Length: 458
Image (cartoon, rainbow, N blue to C red; front, side, top):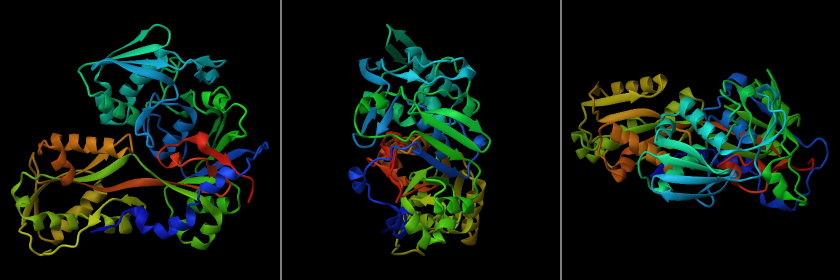
């Protein structure tokens, strides 16, 4: 069995692009006034959505806001920079104790003229805002299990649930969806200008072609550094609406330190320039994923070759190459079949809840093989788009399982995992030149800006 995952198909490129972080630990830090990281992106202000985790939005949110919890991929636990501790009162009630040293950034738009401390009311307010406005059905469904949110004393928030839960499963989902915290003064977030956070960086200037952020010196992580010789970047400068060719030119000229781009084809064509320009390339998954789910209760699955035959037909590799210029993260595996022609399929019931372009591609594939497609409430095959707030594989598998059951298929987690195939996912590329280093590898899984620093010119 061959795995044609996107990262492996570009392995040669990645070897050239990804620099080792091990050397960075012994490097000196740049302490000049020019310690600002500049980014060029093809995105614009309208691309920002506070209630979506597309890469551009999440990049900015993680700079400006801290979530209630986030999933630590190293420890495999729910972690927080604003919650000092939590305890389960019983299986339907959890108490969160707030860290007393967390401050919100000031913001004249919302009449916050000086930094103020975080309160339990802010967290409750942030949860309700997320529930009302989230882009993700799974997040809304999760937050609807919160029956009551109340303050207890000065620094404790009590979340009462509608039913008993498995504490580990609950915390995994709570951490994976990463709810950003905003103050109660912010009644609605319609654009980036409405965002007031408590993250490492605060919004300084928001213009049509540029976003400027500056270091928030009241952040708890900065105090924790104390007298250590670690110097965080003083700010970020994000240049908007930059065409792909122009991005490459700016990076080549060292006019910017990095890019966020939806296309890498222009860089692939200039591979010799790439290896002398880049220090780090990170592939960040977007917030949607195409899935193919087989109904193992249907008769066509009794013949193993039938299943493999269909898998071969819906393989998205050619679709990625022809229609998407290889800009998708492809999970699919092609099987070497013993009897590829041994299928018995003449008709099939299929349910589509996916992109129209991919649906037409699949319909063409089936039509070429003279397979008649029909529709019923419980189809043989369902091809759908999962809108997911997280890249945590364990949580994504849970979402796939829930969808599998909702289709009327077998209520068995193991069967659902075997019968559901990840097809592809759109991605963004974050590329930095050799000036940008990381103290750890956490940026691959989460935007941990406390690990980023700017190295002396090379």
